[in-house]
Image 1 (cartoon, rainbow, N blue to C red):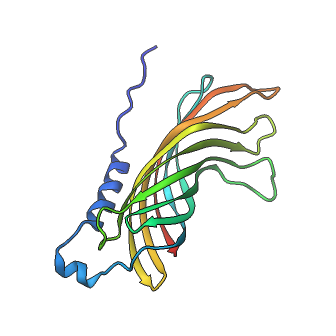
Image 2 (cartoon, rainbow, N blue to C red):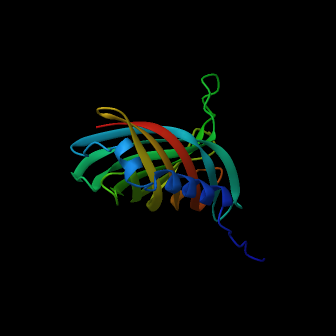
Image 3 (cartoon, rainbow, N blue to C red):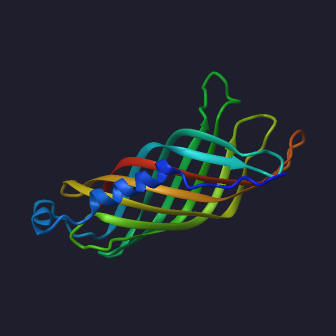
Length: 205
């Protein structure tokens, strides 16, 4: 059977380009009009948006879904140009329901992350992370699974809106294993995913 050739997602590439261009230096006048307060101490950020995720396993063919995304991250500012922390993010494959507890499927990442700020006077950052990927399901005939080796690469832009508050635009791309599930009815081994997300959120530090 011929193997599927993966082509880079044009929408994800364009989203990363928009974030980078929006945050790129625009000269001394622009920098003085949009100063970045010093980065220090503890920080926490929440964001939400949309994206696309592709999942597959040894038994299942590739399935792609465009859906909502969320991210919660926080940590410590080591130096003004570097922040380290933890992040939990995810894609919703099937919405949960109070009236039907058997509904609800998500793909999530739990990661150690680093955010690098190339320019001290700008809010642009580049992000990388490594951790666990997990497949979470409420279906009675399936089990969730988790595996180490998930990664994320991203870029974002922080814009000050108050003394300790910033508006954040971010674009991320992630991939990795999701582990194996061996319930009594359906076996799913070699679960994997890849996906991208574009989020808007609030950061406090």
